[in-house]
Length: 253
Image (cartoon, rainbow, N blue to C red; front, side):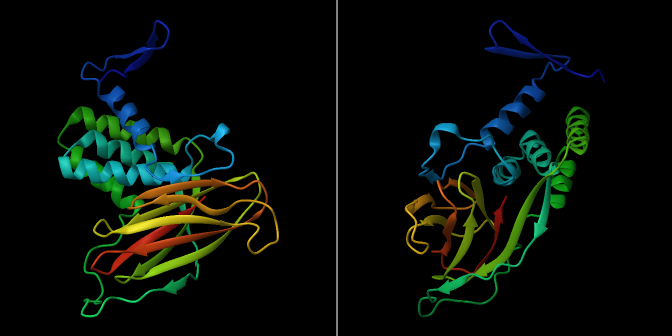
């Protein structure tokens, strides 16, 4: 199979790929770009110079793409998800959140039988299985994975936890002044998990920085990026408003 060649025409508003008559590569690029759009409402004191998508953005985008690809049986969405996670490395860390809330009376608090969030290796294998019958898509997947292996991997710090109905977890995370902190929430795919981030600079440290709500995402998967003008802490809250117990990952850069 010939290797597709990408070229730009005119002022950059028209992009095509020679040797890619079905447009699979350009569709893949579009999927990768669209997956990194964040639905979370973010309030940043320094929104004038947003950094490029980071490791957390890529993980959240991959989970969105994989969910969409599996629901619609779309191989390209799953290839894009596999390409994103192939460039990531996960380090599991222990974080001890503060627990708040109790399950409503009569709620079934038995452990959730639903599998937890999909691991990175499982996403790649799912994509491989989805496109194995299509020679072009199989080649595109292998080429994408090979390209990712040739590049340095971005590192994520991940903590696993479980929330019963009506409960919430609050984490207190340190933030370096002027540096973007990426925070992501990945659920098991079946609950009303939410993510919110509040600034604590000034409230506890006696500083004059940001306080109050900095980011709000009403459902998982979700990502927030916050930048404080001075070093301090943020309070990250994961809530479960659904009727069932759910597992989740809290991820940071």
